[in-house]
Length: 501
Image (cartoon, rainbow, N blue to C red; front, side, top):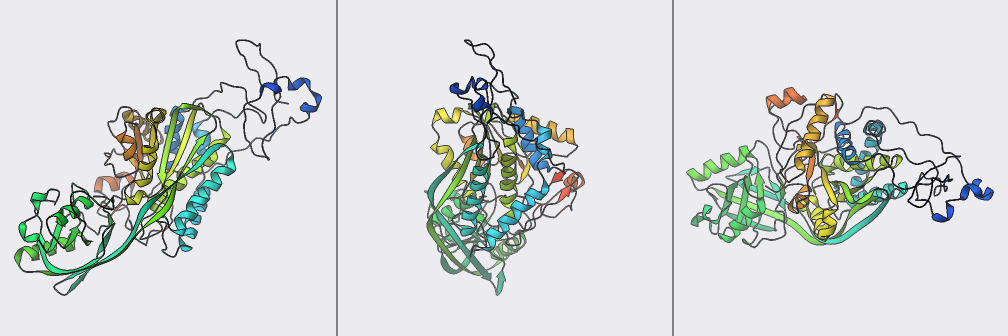
């Protein structure tokens, strides 16, 4: 029989027996006052028993998961301030022990589930509001509830969904054309006119763009702002071409903008866009742009899970978005972050924490950080102050930002990667993922990121492996994305995207 000793100002240490768990789960409850002298009750003693210890599974740990744990453990303490029930008090959290029970087989199993959910969705994606995404949310919620370690909730709301495709041709050539979320339907056959600079200011648009198709380079400002300013200038359509090799797709980030009306828009690769810009500068190029899109209100949810144990006034928060782009299943972006965070949450109940740990799975990130922003906006100032820090898990690579406290997170990541012999490089926060709303209200943030459509440099190829001059994720935001774990030393490499600019 296990005995727990506790001390208060009024009482001397008292031996107590523990209450049994709920339904066979290793669930911990504070002991009640009425049970303090349960050792003296023979009938109550019969309810006390031992539970067998759980041996952690020893497997290769992914760099992403272990990095998150390192940050969490930095804020997790190793003691209880109250008396807890039998089964015996949970052991205090230890980073190395937690990492040992995070297995690649479990990550693969979650990933395969997400692929199955995608196949059940007519759209063959896990974009928010689809069957695939709703099944993803139900799966995560069920897994969390089964632990009985968390207070979980669905934060449900409506938001405007948008899906479509674009086609563009000019001078008899049909181009590989991308479409932007929230881009309107329409057909335009007009002259192509180059826009000066990057189309981030109204003065960049020449007068001859009125009634024509504006050709704009990607860069500096959001796609949505470029399109709105083009509409304000009288353009009938827009083509945005990449400023890096390869194609682009993304979102206009919001259904509308005060700077001007949206007009039909498509995207081209750097190679095609540069050639088109040169032709338009030297002659009369007629373009044919066609966009078919649907936009409708859909109901969706965030999932929030907070440990029952721990100090609720100093919460360690980690989050990942659950939705994909409409073009594919999103197993890289951001299935990897979603399942990594889920597996951490499912293994954490074997330990005790002093600071409460909160996990958030955000919806509609690919539509402009909608879920995370909705959550942050729902918090009172008092509730925001209870969040000690936020860790974002969206395709894994070190990030930093100079919000007070964020530098400590960055330093912790850097020291950890040096310790385990993994190369890392800092990259600036751009506001393009779910940390953005937290940063906006002054909550310290950190995160991991492994790149998306950007090309790997020779130095990076030497540091991490792979091929220089090739995109980190060659299937970024494309239907070709599939579940795959690649092990690099201790590492688990995944990819993410840049979607608003």
